[in-house]
Image (cartoon, rainbow, N blue to C red; front, side):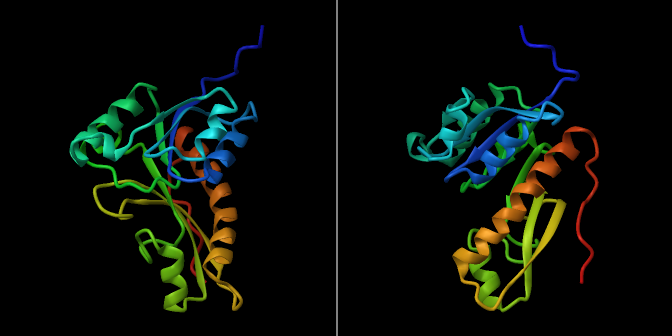
Length: 205
């Protein structure tokens, strides 16, 4: 019989749409018995490759496709219900490529966080890495923020800078951002669930 955990771990639901590299990093962190959170479910808006990270560990998964619902309002309500089934303390949007609506925000506002591959408020939206390169900036980075009704407009919880190198293309820069983003997400989730939710941003250079 396994020994009881020394403290109750916070319950986290992860939402993703792609390969789930951020989710994999969070799952790896939970292997440490001292990490203060555990992933109880992983959900997606499609049959995403990233769901396999959870399935291999015996963690619950769910899929809530927009096309299976009459409209976005119905989809949003169904997504909120699917998340709620797992009684999360925190919901993490980690590469989830849909904008949530009022039903999700009503149930999980203030405990729904998103990762974004730029230093918000710069370069919001789905093409942040491409936009940073097009703008010719020397530094971009990663942000973890609370989700609100806008697009990448919620309060910033943590940021880390990533330099833009002369040889960078979109794929190369995005991969370096992801490396930073994984650790930033793991650290920010730990801070949030232990009540240390203050802003953690680097000082501008």
